[in-house]
Length: 487
Image (cartoon, rainbow, N blue to C red; front, side, top):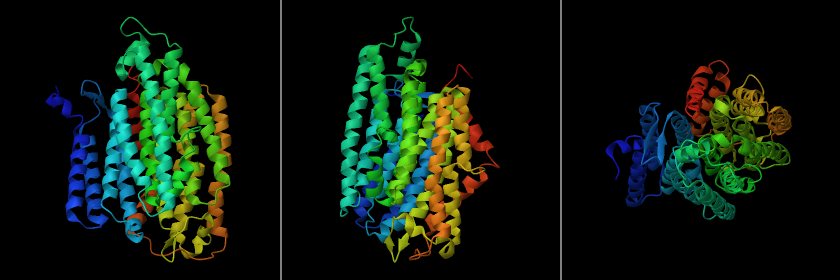
């Protein structure tokens, strides 16, 4: 039986679910192929949900018999997810109208995917985790194939669906092994079992280790971490560009935060077992992302490999573990959010005679035809490369410092080396913008919503060095929730 108090921590999710259903019905009965009114309402719903999340405060609240948890960590993650979703919807308006695919389902699907992500980061049981994960995944499969008349888009949706189903199977098999050997799927219950909280600690035998590996593999697919990254370049290239911008940010943040909660919560006492796997995935992701992007000419594929590389850097902080490592991860995620949103705002503005172009060389001579956009792209690329004093440098600094504190010296050195390699393709884009000749100028002006996203992203990337306190303090408080004994 559900108690009334149980519903308080879940109010943001309940509000969003009701709003999504109401907007779906509104779209059906309006019978107009115009996304703008529904998109504006979706952005308002996301803003209202953000206020509800912040109103819950930082206390830890359990709901639905321990299936759902609301705390400062989930609040921080939800704020980033909601921000990413709102910006993604705003950026998509102009694209959907120009490409004549302006249908009300798009913003509603983004809203439902966001609801799934919020449930993921608040999951306190593998059952609720899977429910949120599948709600997000099903919405994303449809979004990837949203442009039904495009062969690339339908192919991207099919590839994502097939490989996503395989990943879900791996995850469920891992959960079944853990349930069989530990006797529970609840995160708190698993933590007590492994820590000996009930007086009979379960020694992590082969079955539990195998289950943990399968769970890590299933979640790594959602992160597009090596060796489960194979879907990312094709899906990023084939999906409509606003969908790609959404894929690159919100689901990535949700998957990382879920990954962190699973590894530090129920498996916090098995850190020695999972750290080796996470270290291997981090090194693989950093180097595949760095070397894979070097040969790309399509900017969306390049951003796919870039995101794989960034996941590697983020996992350095996860491998470091502890409060310092998770604080570094959260800071990196916040910075990554703005760097990627800004970069995709520029990509969405790459039009020649009304036609969207995706070749990196199409940016040639941008500094002469549109100096403001050229400056924004240069700032964002320098930041992604980790050039000080921009925000991207500090993101890497925090995760590498955590790794050094945890004595993971080899991982830190390899991370710095891969960062040097990845700087090549970021600097190549800047070289094309400022030193190559313009074959055909990009269309002007860009849309107001896209210009706003560019401006906000650039401002955050430039300002973080001088005003780091709000983000650093928030990340530290969020990370402390996962390590109450240390606090």
